[in-house]
Length: 318
Ligand SMILES: Cc1cc2nc3c(=O)[nH]c(=O)nc-3n(C[C@H](O)[C@H](O)[C@H](O)COP(=O)(O)O)c2cc1C
Image 1 (cartoon, rainbow, N blue to C red):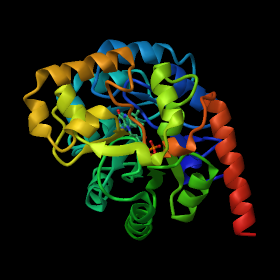
Image 2: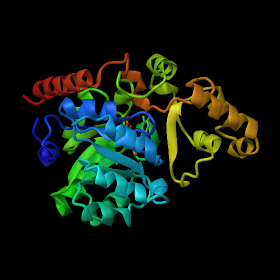
Image 3: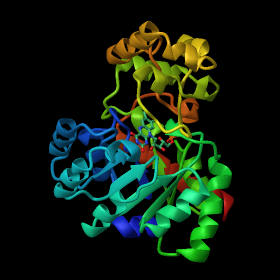
């Protein structure tokens, strides 16, 4: 499959692996790149030693790195550190990328910006984004309200009319070849996949969390702010996170003020997270959890997605 995305990064397949904080290390990112996609290390909130270790673990594969924008703005030296590692791309999501875009562009490194609204897509394009990832609310982890199915074509129309050099990827709910085929039909040049790569043998995920996600279906997820209140992470108001619901979300989702006044409950969540306990803490995963039935190597996932997408496209559009 040749698209603007494969041409821009000289990829075999139009698939980017999402830079998932804590889960997407150098092993996963390099496996995805080796299999013909683009792997991204999940730099997340910005832990300098961890990011170095993950780049060291990539061997000679070319990978990029993603950061949570509002967090990395408080540690801009980490961006310089990553740029010194010669990344294939830098990915930013969640909050205004200005002025970090200037540092990325000045280094001549491709700038991928994940957005949740059309307004933010236009702004990111004005700031020189080479790739826009339009993220729908089906997505695992943090995000916002728009649905992938309408958001992607709206951004595609804007790019076609006003910024035709910009590459567009769809994100949120894409876990198999049907999702890739649908994304191309909606006007995207490729996909960014998180949840499906989270359940791979290369991801850094506790086995109990994996088992919980494999048993769950899409109905079992919820978008909530409880996880950030429990961890004391100062996320901007507009974002929340899609996770597997459990007793913790059942109790606190509608009582964030109560949770803020219950340090013991928050502490139990943090301890549960450290122990990989899906009952005490929450699994970060999207609605695509219902399409995930086992843990596989990243290369198998990529091959299956591409093969199925080709079959779907051949069958529907012959
Ligand atoms: C476990 C997990 C962690 C994530 N962490 C991050 C992150 O650190 N930074 C980020 O920009 N997006 C993060 N995301 C969101 C992804 O960038 C992406 O939008 C999402 O995974 C796409 O939807 P999908 O999960 O349905 O594939 C995370 C997603 C998951 C599932």
